[in-house]
Length: 108
Image (cartoon, rainbow, N blue to C red):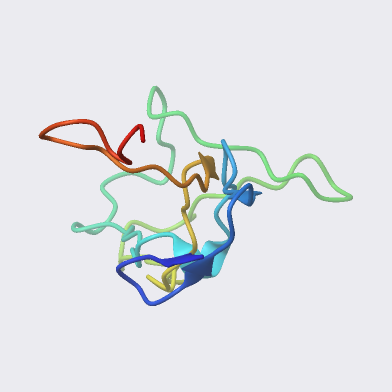
C-alpha cells in the first residue's frame, strides 16, 4: 500500500518490529581492554597486595613472581564489531487521510 522512507513497502494491517533486541558480540561497539603493570615488582612477598592463589591441582602455587624484576602484561582480545542491526519499533501500517479544509470526501 505505502512505502516508507527506506523504500520498504508496507501493507495495510501489517505489523512488525519488536520491543526488545538482544545484541550479538558483532553488533556492540568495538572496544578493547588493556591491562598490565607499569613497574617492576618491589617484593617477592606482596603482603597486603592481595596475591591470588592458583586454581590448579596444587593449591600451594601462587600466581605472583618469586623475583622482583621484570614486568608482566597480558592481552585481552578486542571485542565488538560495530555492525548494524534492525531496530524497528513495533508498528501497525494504517491508511488515513487528513482533510485540512472542508469535508472530504464530499457528503453528496
